[in-house]
Length: 312
Image 1 (tube, rainbow, N blue to C red):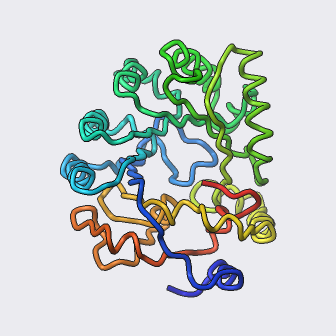
Image 2 (tube, rainbow, N blue to C red; image 1 turned 180 degrees about the vertical axis):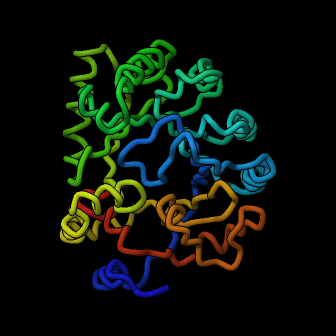
Image 3 (cartoon, rainbow, N blue to C red; image 1 turned 45 degrees about the vertical axis):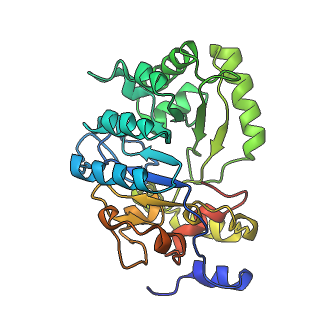
């Protein structure tokens, strides 16, 4: 792979290229179909996408979880709930005593056949990571579509009533993405602001807020290019490079499984079709020893994970 500005930057502050350290988590993207078409979506998910993990690949994921000491499965999409094997994957992973995390956009609970998903999550003690770009209606609807904010708020209130988001209860985390070409504010400060405002305005509680940086790939990259902000945004990410983020960067602690079973260092490399550097690149041939010692494939989009306080 051609040496990137990011790899040169890493070598200027690190003893060598980035390598994996441990694999406590298997991140699984079960498909790109989504009920929404958010402006910042790096996978360009939407209702017309057809990529979907089939049952055979789901079984390969479960076989890896059954034979290896990987404690957590982190399920993402698109809207992962739209995969017809989604409930099967979660149910079987829980039978294996794995910790299950599901990413949800909250508005999916309003789609036909999805109304009981919150109860399904509760019954299997699934940790939720829910996208809520902001606590202001106009901001959210501008990014995700008209009427989505109200659906998200009602879904969060419902999850609270089921025992999510309370101290000692089921875990409900929220995700903030900047609604434009700028970096997220300090995570702790914004979490306190979210908790205060959501409680005061809607009586909503949650556990943690994660602030993510919008990656300069996919639909967000198209937006940057269309508005003439791509170079400026990249400069901002590069100038905000923080070497302290390299220890905890996502790709060193997990491996990402694409909808077709191909293995990637992260969800972003998956979108860019940059597979892992090991000889075995499919979940069917999963080699934990090789995956745990692999060199991470990087590109200039990786500046998004190392800018400021870091992301992911």
